[in-house]
Image (cartoon, rainbow, N blue to C red; front, side, top):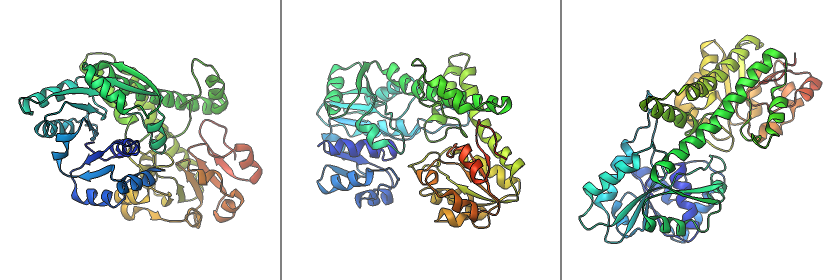
Length: 427
């Protein structure tokens, strides 16, 4: 496995736990040293235990050396493909890694399989690079095997996926990948390289579309005096639609949805297609953050706010494209003082905001002196908090709930002013 981010590390750890010998190749000595000591570098429930177990039994090894490729049957590429300013996926790391793999191929047949999310045609380019740089007698085949794990549930998603996608023109490569995935659940979809590459982008883009559609309905519901959650619950009861990802809030974030929607739109534009549907998915997502920030600015009692939740979703420390970043920037620009708490992500946020924020390791301490509470991530500990204590601790009983964590009827009963998304305000 080349790369040890969320995809690389979780996937490698699960394959090692299934009894395979897995070498994970990185490029930063300090990170490799930490990984060897059992530090996963990321917060992912259940991962640290699997990592520790497979370091001890010898199934998992971390290295800077590409020499281990010589004896490998399968080499996965799991490096980042970040978005450029135009939305295109940067493939520099993929191509550099492909050349390094080529130069280190051994005598045995090797499958080179891309786990990174890459545009259509990328694996063809990988194939060309490998052919150009590999030893003359090297035997290899290229495959596309995209991942579908979600941060926060990555271990379970890797063990029990809905489907395993294998794209290749080599039956030998397909057979090896099927053998590797025997302990893994899910339907098998065997297809060509281009289709496998498209499946990942199409999957993330349709999910992002459902979220943006939900937030558009939320905006309409606020104007019409309707309850968006009731509307979407009823819509989700239709088996053709389902209720998954019909969630109102402050929009999606993370490493996948924003990047993949932009990348698919970029690909479409390169093909001279009308990408309006994807452009507007992104536009609605950004607008959801702005609308929520403006509601806080308009309705807050005072200029001191407590922020609960900084990661883009619960059960992860990832703040990439997190709605909290855009919302807090707007609030700071409007002159608010922000006291913040998150169980995992504060170290990453501190690197962005520095001393512009006041950081607390205890959520209740963050409330002291605050005139309103703003909830931006739906961590379980927020839903189970004693709201009567929250009310006593806040200067004013005002909550802005960007994730609809609380029940409006209960908030009214407790005497809060309560602003959520797509539902009537409690004033």
